Structures are given as structure tokens and as C-alpha cells.
Length: 173
Image 1: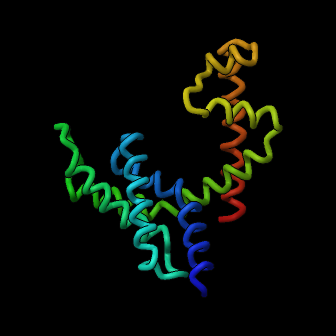
Image 2 (image 1 turned 135 degrees about the horizontal axis):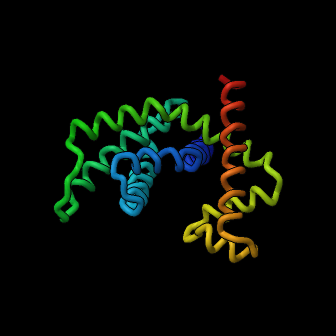
Image 3 (image 1 turned 120 degrees about the vertical axis):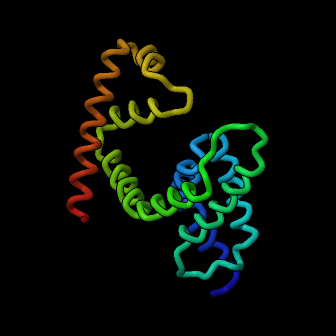
């Protein structure tokens, strides 16, 4: 494999696993902003160490290991005094999350497929609801409905998505 091909494969792996990597980091720090910062630091380190990655091996496991070290460093560097997870608990949470990553990836993939099956109007409503800064009230004002009506509509869409994801996973499982 030539260097350019490896670089492209590495970049694909890195981008493909951003959501899972962010979820892993967030599960350890439980702070969205800290998780985003640590993800950026992790990405930089992964890029710097890309030559240490063996093509064909488990990229996500390797990336999670790097992320775990970044989480530890961030926790040590935080000047604020607040209760943190002990090293042992941090390791336990990390191991638990890593064992569930394949299942979470399967659920996320199923959800994407189920979102694609929704009528366009329902999919747009769900997407708008989860945009940063969105709320049911703002969405209701935007589409000219009551907040209660929008809330009920979102509830029904979520039920359909949940049923679809379960059925998809059952077929694939």
C-alpha cells in the first residue's frame, strides 16, 4: 500500500469513528465542552501517530486507548476542585463502553436507515429539533403549531424510530 493510499485509509477511519470516539470520551468526562476539547486533542495525537497504526487492525480500539490517556491528562490538568472519577472507576467505565461500542455502532447505523425511511416532513422535524439551540417551543413557533402539538408529533416519530431500530437490529442480529 502506498503512502497516499494509507493516508486516505487513515483519514477515512478517523472520520468514520468520530461519533463513537466522542461518545467514548463523553462517557468518561460527562462534560460536552471538555469532551469536544479532548476529542480535538485526541485527533491531533492520532494524526501525529498515524504511522504507528497498523492498517487492518482495530482503529477504534487504538483511538480509544489514545483518548483514554487524553482524558487522564485532562483530569490531571483541570484546576477546578470537583469530584472526579477515580482511576479505577475511569478504567471500568472505559472497558464497559468499549465492549458496547459495536452494539452502539449497529444502533446508530440502524437509526440512520430508519431516519431515511421517514417521510421527508417528519425527518426534517426531527433534524430541526436536535439542531444546537433548538427547542420544542422555537420549533412550534417556526412551523405555526402549538408546542403541545409539536411535542406529541415528535413523540410519535420517536416511537416509530424506536420500533424501526429494534426491528432492524432483530433482523440483523
